[in-house]
Length: 117
Image 1 (cartoon, helix red, strand yellow):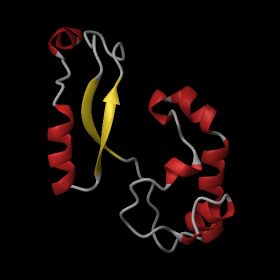
Image 2 (cartoon, one colour; image 1 turned 90 degrees about the horizontal axis):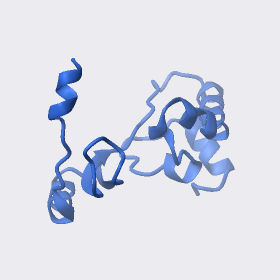
Image 3 (cartoon, helix red, strand yellow; image 1 turned 180 degrees about the vertical axis):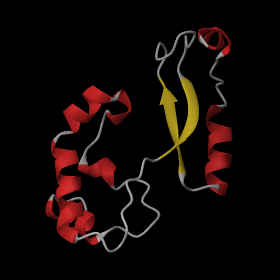
Image 4 (tube, one colour; image 1 turned 45 degrees about the vertical axis):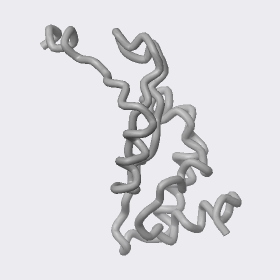
């Protein structure tokens, strides 16, 4: 399947198109793919993305979710080492784009570190 990589390409749609999309679908946000990220990506590409969300059922114990979120945030470097898309993982970014109710365990962690009131 390596032959497919020769046909892949990123399309720069521009901020105006991203803004229009985000007005209709608020779960998207602007992202810039830096030049050189992918083969053939010779300039920065403005596009859109969805926030990554970790979801838990309401009946998962508060302590379990609290410990999971805390462990992820305190080990962000290890997450990034496994997958570069985890770059920038931090409490401030952990609450960006939240469109659904937050689990009480996650809310407790984010309040504890001062990013939620």
